[in-house]
Length: 206
Image 1 (cartoon, rainbow, N blue to C red):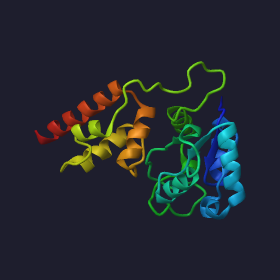
Image 2 (cartoon, rainbow, N blue to C red):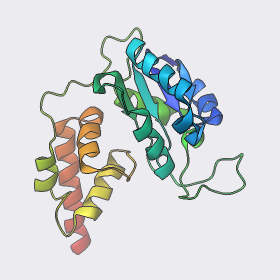
Image 3 (cartoon, helix red, strand yellow):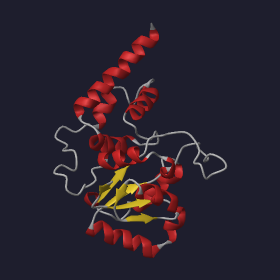
Image 4 (tube, one colour):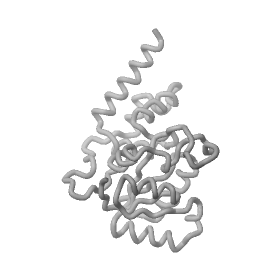
């Protein structure tokens, strides 16, 4: 169990229950799309962003990204962090059928993966000396282009491999990917992944 300084934002009550088994923190539930019309809760999140900072941890489907994008509106970039769960396909035990996109939500993700996602996001872990990765040599949009992840015939496939190897969801814009990737890995590790992807392509051709 780790204790986190930031307030964590999740979509539903079952997400909160799952997260409480992995971390000790203030956890706020958006109740799905209800947050769009809940002015009081939005004001509360802005207040908590100023006091503790926010970490948004939503599902990796379209609905989750819509809620994530809404929550970040009006909050300074230095007051909000984004934690992402990887695309894992399956069905939560309490549900009769899988979700529309067939992916597990936060409630269905292993607690170790959730803890790791929060650490990657730069969560402030109480009683730990080092909390977030220092970005001394950031990965840029040009790096992604030069390495074949954007703007090329094979970019989409390579990009999927990159996101998979980093344990990130597939639904990410280039700008968002740059921001996230610089918080979840180092440039050396990124270069190693690029090399592995190209080596796998060569091996598949032979």
